[in-house]
Amino acid sequence: MNVRIEDYSSGGGKRPPRRAPQQRAAGGPGGKPPKGGKGKGPKGWKGRDKMLVGAVGGGVLAMVLALVVVPGPEKPAGSGKGGGASASPEASDAPGLSRGHATAAGALGTRRIGGAPRGFPHTQDGAIEAAASAMGQSLNMFRMSKSDRAAYQKDLYVKAPPAEFEDRGAIWRAQNNVNEDGQLIDPVDNRPQTEKRLTTLCHPELGAYKVETAMADAATVTVWYPCLSGVIDPKVPAPLQTQWTLGQLKLEWARGDWRVASSGTGSYSSVPSPSDPGQPVISYAERAKLLEPLGGGWKLFADARASAPAELKEATQ
Image: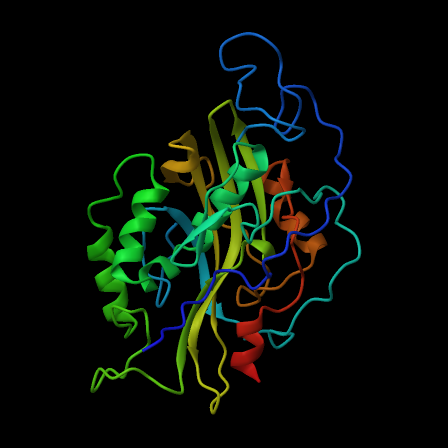
């Protein structure tokens, strides 16, 4: 039986047109690398944007992977004012929150494992997209086939993947009535559901990112975003669960790709969330306001949007 494994982003596979680059300080993230000195002028820098460079919790968003993140409060999407529809797309970015070149959809990836982008270039944007992709796949990894899960985990980490990964995946699938092929099953007879389906999509394009550190072959990237999960039943419209999440990955350039060296939350102890935590779609201006207490440097992804994801529309129609 063919199993539908959803990608983490519905932003499409095409990379949006580049915007004019903003001025950057030499040697800073995305800027021209200084010459000379160990780690200051790496040969990995090519072109303009040179080298630089979790687990969600509660209900369906159970502890997964070893991509540790701080989960925010969980609430049904659209449970508050506004009905969970969408914020109106904005023509321009909010003051203090510019749009970067990297995409949340991982458009720079040159290969895929189980539907997840891998094979990112040795550039700043490549590092950012590798981090966004890993965060976005934090739940869908457990819905890959067993062979794809093993291959993706091995490819994702600098060293061997966490030994407990398969145990966590088995627990997650049991909790959410998902079989080994990633398909929703009837908990009574264990048969695959034919009319209902489980969605477990995370959306970095609805959040923002920040490059914390940038060196020749290493980088630290923080991503803030919402995840949507729940059972979609065409006959019974129901809200999805929304979880605002923040995670930080330390990446290293190893074996020809950006790989995860470690994960955590850095200095962040809480997750910004809108006044209605069940609202996964907020304007760019509100994102800037929510992130302001966390300091500067946050950016929108190149494919950022302020409109409802496809699965949210499908679940509530």
